[in-house]
Amino acid sequence: MAATRDNKPHATGRVPAGDVTQRVGVEQMTSRGVNIEELREKLIDAAGAEFTTYYYYTILRMHLAGKEDYKEICEDARLEDRSHFELITPRIYELGAGLPRDIRDFADRAGCPDAYLPANPTAVEILTVLLEAERCAIRTWNEICDLTHGKDPRTYNLASRILQEEIEHEAWFIELLSMERDGVARPSGHFRRGNPGDAPHSKNMPFYVP
Ligand SMILES: [Fe+2]
Ligand SMILES: [Fe+2]
Image 1: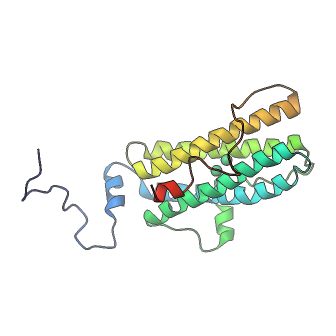
Image 2 (image 1 turned 180 degrees about the vertical axis):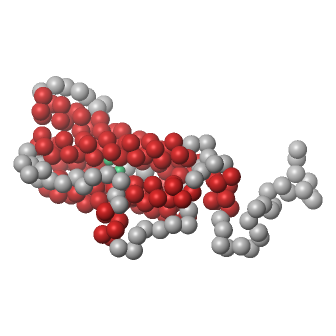
């Protein structure tokens, strides 16, 4: 039924007018069945994994010394993890939560294992660490997509954009590890990003300035 001058069905709701202690953006998700507390916690864990992975990939990239192609791919994945952290962090605050005050707490609760430099840092060993880190990220963002699909379009949009890049990252490292370790071609379909860490799906700029 069309709205009329006296009937604006969305003008009011469960959150009282002028109440700044509640968010309609959250209340609407709750009414659609999202467990906000669970989602917040998972998003903080996921942001922690992106942030720590960005850090650890810095070290891994350094130790791919002499392998310029591997370094470049690692750098793309590294910078895109930073982009993922940047993309999801504002959403955590919008949902009424925030990052831990102490970065040590943040690192400890990261949702994926530390991507440590292997004791024997050959290209095969480093690529294996990179591959498994991407796989953890895919599982993480798929779960966020599942929790928000059809109920929280905003978080879903962010998570699905991140997921697309994580799936690309897995394919890159499968290609490199397969050839480096087994001599078998398993193409990713990838050539190269335009600029290092281009983050075609997760970059912030087009999102905030459409
Ligand atoms: Fe990531
Ligand atoms: Fe990734």
